[in-house]
Image: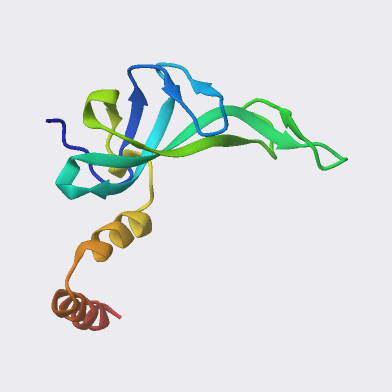
Length: 123
């Protein structure tokens, strides 16, 4: 079984049917946003095109070098390891704060207090 970490970049290896009736093609890029049952399934945010809002407030197709552009989220969907391939580890795509938040979410209350105490010594 493939093992992915929170915020790892992945891509689909098959077409994925979305709740709105659309289909995300194979090779659609996404990010792991939740992990279920130690990796039996993953919540994945899937991305589409570069888009931006025009002057009327409508979403239009754009490109990555436009100042106001962002990548559109097309779905947040539960996928299984056999439906996705690893692309890039989280440490290469998200900042240290996001990585720490992901780790902190998994810690017990006791360990959170230990981290808090340690962090206070760094201030």
